[in-house]
Image (cartoon, rainbow, N blue to C red; front, side, top):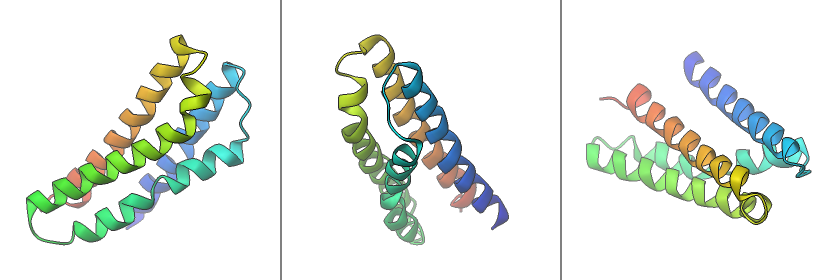
Length: 117
């Protein structure tokens, strides 16, 4: 349980901090609290996914994790698209890809570390 708490809190604070720093570097002013809130709300699909991962079928686990990644990533892309992709395509699009990759890595960690059985 300690590992789960450390991973969740570290992921929920470090990734938004990096995102906020990158936004600040490209002259987009979003409050740190706003970025943390958006990122925190993006974890909502994982609640349902974790509950579905208690079903002892591997296919159900993978589908629920992929659905959580997709919904969470779409939520983040929808909230940061106007900020990042409109004017600053050289920097904005790689940051959006980083957001999706971070969520994919987080969900893969959840699936392989906590739901490996």
